[in-house]
Length: 120
Image 1 (cartoon, rainbow, N blue to C red):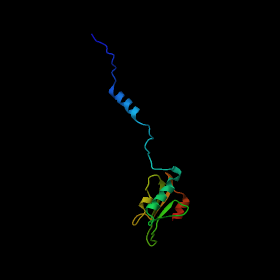
Image 2: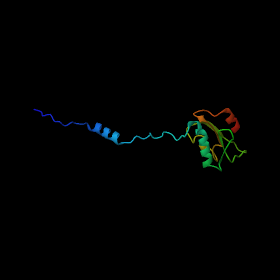
Image 3: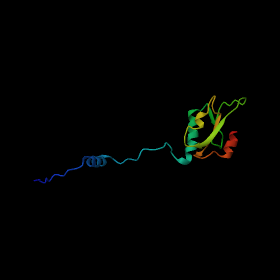
Image 4: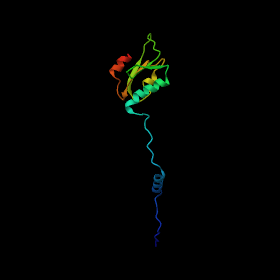
């Protein structure tokens, strides 16, 4: 013969979930990217590179192009370019024995023809 108890049996994982959700404060989810505004991200990357390497890089005016500040025109110079979004892709390889310059396109977009011609 079974005696019914007035106690309620609570499944432990359910109780733990309820307690945790009740005690946690709601906060925004952690950021997935370090981008202030997607439409400004390429120019912000360029500004950051110029601040980080003021004596090694220069920007072509009116173009998303970074060049080495010490170009030797008696040697072969190499330019690379492509879409932005995987920084420091392209611009991160500018330096002695590496790239002479980088042409930055938009987020996952090719650089403009005008920027490529200006870099060349």
